[in-house]
Every structure is written in C-alpha cells, then in structure tokens.
Length: 119
Length: 284
Image (tube, rainbow over all chains, first blue to last red; front, side, top):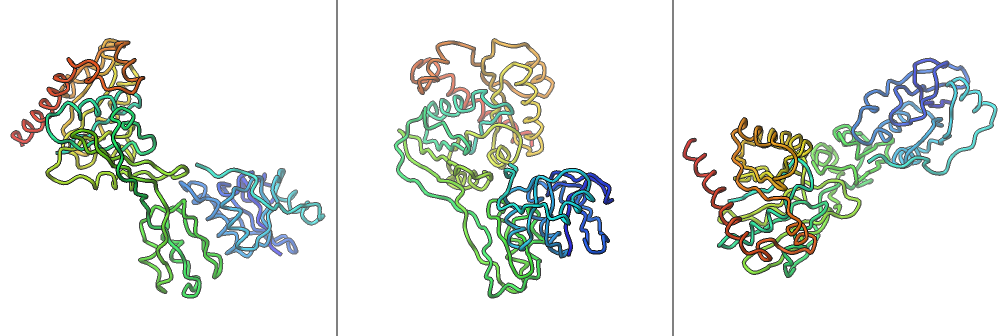
C-alpha cells in the first residue's frame, strides 16, 4: 500500500511540509517495503492557481491510497475525494514519523478540507 | 472616438473627471463605467436604467460517455481548471479562463459548453448620455471579459468616455487598449506619482496619446510637474483641493452642475484632448 506524504526534502528523514499543493516534494512511500519515490512538486508549487488539484492528480497517478499532510484546501480535497484517496491532515514531524503514525493505526481520516482556498 | 479616463493609483478622481467631462461636452456621449469591480459613476450621473443583462463566459462540461480519460484537456489547461483521475474528470469552473483549449484539443469531442456568469451589464440614459456599466458577480475573479462586453456597446461613430479601473494590470489594460486617448488622473503626492509612472509606462506600450489631469493640485510637492515636462505629458486640467468640491462629490452631485463655472473648463478639457489627438496624428 502506498502513502503520499508532503515533504520539505527528498528523504524519509525530511520534515513534513504542512502545505499540500505547494510542498516542494511529495514522497510516495510503499509502507510494506519502505521503498519510496520523491516526486518533485516544484512545478505545482509555483502554479498561479490550482496547485492542489495538480498535486492530487499526481498522487493519484502514482497509485497512492492515502495522503498525509498539514493542510488541505477545498479543491485539493475535492480532487482527492474523486480519486478515492483518503486524507490525514495536521501531520507534523518527519516523513518517517508520519509513516510510523499511520502504521500504528493512530490516524483519523478527515472528512473535509482544513484550509481555505487561495485567492 | 474613445477617451479612457485612467490612473495608476486608485481614488485620484477618475469618476469625478469622467462624469463631469461627459456632461460638459456639447454632443451625444456614451459613458462606460468599466470599473466593473466597483462601478460608481451611476451615483453621480443618476441615469434611468432601461436594461440589465447577465453576461456569461465559456466553461467546460465533460460528456462522461464520450470521455476516454486521455487527460489532454487537463494537460493543456494552464489554470488547472480540469483534473483527470482515471476516467473521472473534475471541472473547477471558477479557475477557467475560457480559452476553450480543452474543447479544441479533445479527440473524443467530449468537452461541451457550459457557462459561468461574470456579472450584469446595465444600460440607460440621462439627458444626452447613454450610460453603460458592468457589475461583476460577487465571487467572480475575472473582470476583463465583462469589461470587453461593456466596450462592445461602442460604435465607430460614437464619442465614448470610459471610466477605467485603477492600476496597470489586465482590467486597466482592457479598459484602455484600443482607445484614442488616455486621460490620466493623478495627484501630486509621492504615491500618486509612483503609480502614475507605472501607468504611463503601460500606456507607452499600448502606444496611445496621453494627457494628465492633476487633482488636488495644490497639495504635495512639485515632482509631478517635473515628471510631466520630462515625459512630454501635457497637463490638461488642474483641480484644486477644495472642501466645496469634496462636499459636492460626497453628496453624489456633479461639479459642473453645482458650480456652473466648471462646465466650460471641462468643455475645454475635451477640446484639448481633441487637439492633442489631432496634433499627434498630423506628426505621424
């Protein structure tokens, strides 16, 4: 099972980036093998608008089933929902911490966006 | 002929100048309020509105039966208004800029036309003036198409005065582009001059003759006059900082009607604009 975590760097030891659409990297981690791919999100991060929509599409294309991040806006959330990807928000610490948290089962899936749309 | 009344800085007196100018010209005039985010010229003109028409813009709608999920529509959209997730396509109409690229590129003809309301166009008369304004829908972020709709009420033989939005971005450019003269309203303050310079640079790119109205002309400093000389910009009118003028404005009245001695001054402003345009034409 693959989990996407927004990250400030390219390693499991990198800090989680609280932003979903505009995080510099998104790490897609296979939690069974701990193999991961660091997606360069810089193209979306610089988008004028719709960064979250693009990031959500990318995460879907990589086959992730869960997204772990800090904040997720309404358009990103709608896109992830359409892609049937679950969202865990308010995540902090390292990417590895986030994965551990998920494995321990102590996560709650959010049912709505927890950030306003950007204007 | 189209005269656009513009400014870099907001609140310099565009509406005061455009409304007073419109009623002082001794021929039929069309006055367009293109400041569609906050049209207020009607407050001073008090036209009798005869028509109110909603204006729509293209947004895509996906025919799910035809769509094969190829993703080309999302790829071509630089505003991320479409997301393709397998065979599911999400449309975010509020992000769409109506380029119709998605419709052109779709190999399956699955992109249909839907519409998003941009706002309404109101039109009416007062004395010899045909007044048109755009009023953007609350929540709408894209004003240029509505501004262009307002401008579509101009015919080549008309004398049109456009009350433009402030600034130098797309809304202001769409109100000034293709006009015969830009009347730039400014004030002699550091803010006024700073934003005037930006606006004058934009007008140079558009290659439109330009002249200045200095409002509240006896405040601030003299840097504005130095700049005008340096740029060769004629100062066509100076309006002093006068409490009685402010009071007339705050009551929603027209200066030329409350203080009739201003009427010939605004009439001469129009003559000066015509002269400037003709001089420039003869040079070219």
